[in-house]
Image 1: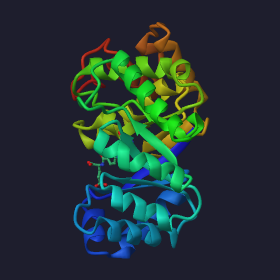
Image 2: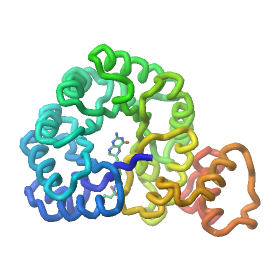
Image 3: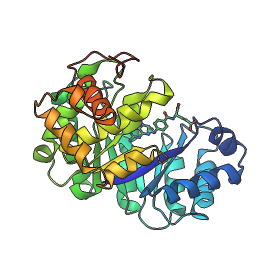
Length: 292
Ligand code: THG
């Protein structure tokens, strides 16, 4: 699986001020640390960047490229800023993300061809968030059709079904899994990507990795191609690199209906199984789900 480090992000308490103040040091330190942690791409999320967004994206892409050779995933809702970043990016960039809202789609889709980039197609339509797996299917067909018309092949499109928090509407999480199991039939050769940490938004910080790791393993069963992740979760990276096959097998058996006796498992195995039960909707989410 391909991993995209999420950490250079305008919402962060250290990176936000560094971006606004054009202070390279914290950003370069973080980009270097993410690279050393072993991710494949770095996501640079500068947010809406309404004021001088093009200058900011140019600056941050150049700043990060001084310390890493990893390809970058550029994330902003400002199309001018996106194009500015693509202009200075070395090699093949990933445009994160292009939704189906006409004001995003129309200016941004041509950039994929113009700059020979890959794109994340975010399944967010004119009516906002899709309500179930079927609505996600409708959106993906529409998005892929429009991209193909511009000469963008399926293999350059990474579909993002939009992962939502486990502490919220669990049916949305289930819809996301269900959609992932169908994606290959609907859009052959398209890749897939999720913002993995979304699943643990609203969860106490020390518990977030449990949800992130279990959710990733579940999505791996459906052939997840890539994920935007916390580069500093070393266990998550080990799992993605195939270094914890026993846990992966256990999670996949539970998804197939096996009900292991928790007392026969190690503490770590039991934690994974309890978390999977929350993510399938079998157990109700609460901040104390691991203690029950
Ligand atoms: N799909 C796509 N892009 C995305 C997302 C997605 N980009 C943004 C997001 N979702 C994925 N990236 C993050 C980045 C940070 C966090 C979560 C998701 C996060 N950060 C901590 C916090 O806010 O508490 C810590 C911030 C810090 O470093 O201080 O949770 O779904 N295509």
